Amino acid sequence: MAGKGSWSRDGVISAADATIVELFSGLSARQFAKLVGQLQREGADPALRGFP
Image (cartoon, rainbow, N blue to C red; front, side, top):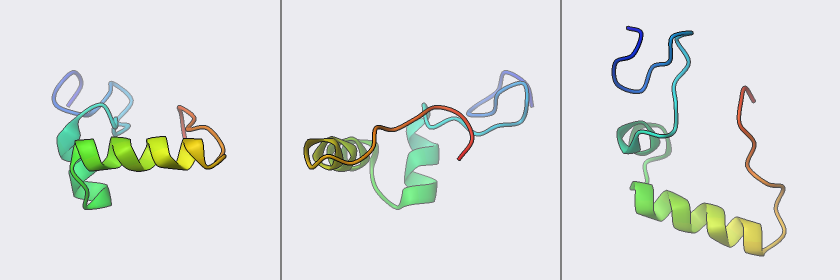
């Protein structure tokens, strides 16, 4: 699946694709971005890249 859709060459799902954000969070990409922004304003830890 390398190079197709939201999968990287290592088989890792990327949040860069709005479809993946919606699938896993239940929010639209815009709603998710607004949520992350609100959390940042309230002092939450910054979002990090990579594995959890």
